[in-house]
Image (cartoon, rainbow, N blue to C red):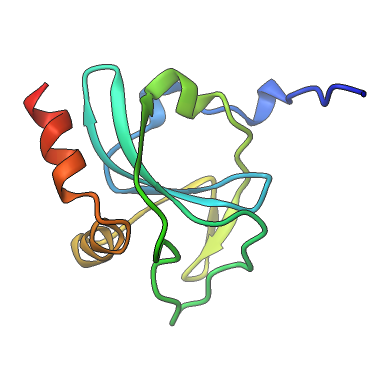
Length: 118
């Protein structure tokens, strides 16, 4: 079986990752960073193969549990630019209500509280 080589040019720098940023992987999966504490973060992942979000789309994290991982691990995925309300970029800042919607959709309040208590 042939191993797929990762494109390091599509990786993020750890310093670029901030709470409230929305990213889109080359596997067409949205990821919203919900909390950061030290070297770890909590993020909401969507299903792979997602259609692009439109201006009236809800956050795409329903029934998807939040995940905890190291910032370095999060950065070492392949991300692509995507359109968000008429702007194309690799990351987009969520509003407070959008971030709250993502947190509630993936039921991350307890996990975020645990991370912040570490």
